[in-house]
Length: 428
Image 1: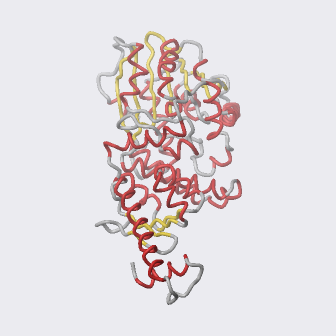
Image 2 (image 1 turned 180 degrees about the vertical axis):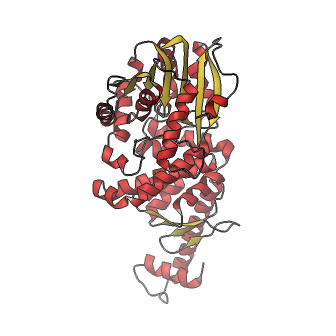
């Protein structure tokens, strides 16, 4: 720390007294101690995060340089309170302070977040997040009333908002890019087809879908594969949109969109599909989901679950769980097997489409930024920044391997009507 900066700080903390006045030496000593304490706290915080290649800049101009690596970005901490919150709980406070503009990122936001994810100690990350999550979340169960509140928080904020940055069919799940140069619309259509091929759908069959979003998959199944679909969802906005689209396309006789919880589903079906819902179910409800699948599928039935996941059991990032996806928990593969094992289902195929989700998020974030003025007209500035951080952080998480995207195909144990090879997946 320079003598000039020390003197300036001492003057500021002394109510504007001149540095030549009596008592300057004790104030200089105090200033040195304050700066040293801040440096030590920040150094320890950065060490706990794995020392990502970032520079930290404090509100008074003091800079903490990236240790040993060229910085990918500069993180500006704009006040003392933001610093203290960040040191106390970085996984929660970074998002809170960024949303409130008390932290700013100079440089590429995605690169900054990816650097943090890549630096985090992999073996300990889950335990750190678990400890941070416990004080404010607690052992909440995704009961039906709570599930409705959680889904309303995220999905019922307005279809016009999602139309700004999703594809034309409003598919809010990972796309499938046989060619990485594909556009988003083409890749989402390819994903819908890919799911149908994995389910080996045939004309005249019946399908139950748990968590249907805005209805794209159910309508695609009925239109292109000749099946009838019963689709469940508890988002009012999504169900209303899906029903209107079914009527407009003349498919309302083949697809029934039901505003109800998947746990209340009834009937017998040839296939079960769930794309992008499992993240919201909660691991404590996996047996309930397995029970629904078991009572819904015929003896020759088969199914597919598509879900964001983790390499090992770990809770959702605390800031996202609190502000974006309440009640969400992306499972590990070992946790997903709790859906199948108690009910005698055999897992046939597991595919990880992590990089496909990163590519999907690139498109979403680009479209979001292109429409940022319209988003700002719909919501307040904090919302605009929060959703930018959510999309950028999700992209960074999939690029870095912090998040995965699993597609798991299954059928009843001992059912031998299965393909000999995977060729059927790639023959369009």
